[in-house]
Image (tube, rainbow, N blue to C red; front, side, top):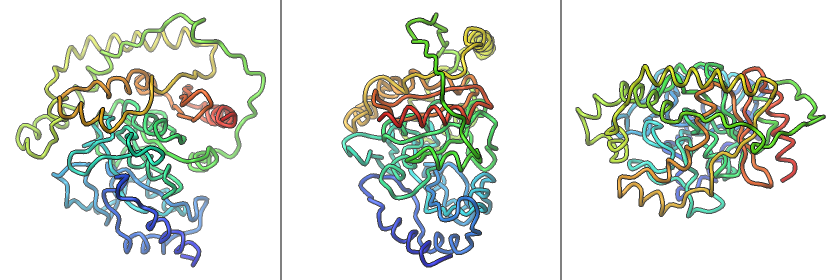
Length: 367
């Protein structure tokens, strides 16, 4: 590790503000040791905050749960190991909704996450800590997961970029599952160029001859959100419900509230979503990319989130999750970007990632 890299790492650790609640685990000695092995690749010197749902060898990984408070993996998730081989330096593990099950930005065991620009608001979740770390300038890159919007929502709340990879594009090995059919990896950054480097995209195509169709001119595709949540709950309950019943004290109240909801008819939901995907693809067959809001309204306040937690309601979460699940149900990549009109997300079919980033850069440049 060069002197400048070591200085960068130590300066980054000094910038961590505990009040923002971004990190669960920071181990300066381990960070400096890992940075000493920096190989000088295409991400040389890039500092990274990793969501605490993702295994890192020798660095505590709690999954946002007290059940794993002392859990230290012996292996690193392959995609994080690849970032390190390319020269990235992991600074620590970031806060998240418990087991990534939620988008409130509050973890009853590890604390509230807060947006750096307005600490009275939360960054949402579930990858809120990674978004906060990037937005606060602690690190260059944030790593998260996105199952129904958990990268795009915090990016929008924090005014940064958040890219959700296509389902299956990056291995989920070494990542605690929530809903495997919907789980995907995502990245946060303050600029498009770094996400481009992480994705290994050598050049972005020019954005010319844009032809825009307003949403008002499109027939509604009517995503069946209920069907998405039936399949989501079926998988999440399969993973968590038995253990939550066995050791209820190890799970937060909001998780118990969520898991008290009935699953629904799984085979019927499968059929409904399959028909919707076919119809969505048919109606948009001549459309390259889709631009839409990330969520209606503003980032939630801490007071709103805590009221929902106390009352056992999901009002704030339901608002935040009213649009983003479309990309997960389709399996498409999606990119949350700051624009003059507010945060927007760009969706495209797998393989259109360069065009998605190019349009994201174009839209954000107007800000």
